[in-house]
Length: 101
Image (cartoon, rainbow, N blue to C red; front, side):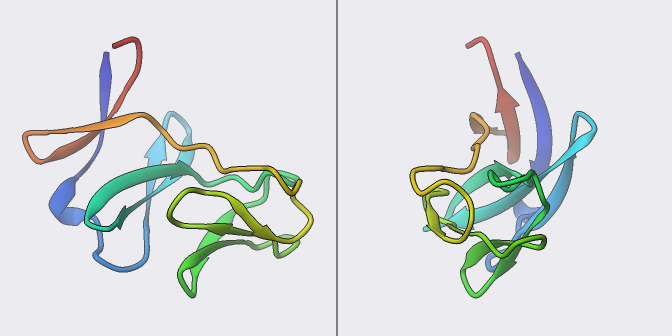
């Protein structure tokens, strides 16, 4: 099964774009030209994230996470935490969330 998130040509080359995902939001962006999608949720208390200076930063308490792999860089989130990436595939120019395949 799959669910379309966004057309690949609508994903910014720099920064992220927020896309609705079943009543929540995900950041879509490119790392080394590859489209990615990550939940807009900090692993500390679930605050929203923004993309600042090449990393995700929590608006509530300042936790920071790497764009490349979602690993925690600093802040109050657990030291071994990693943001939740969605399983995706690009088909016909569209980034799709996939499950059960």
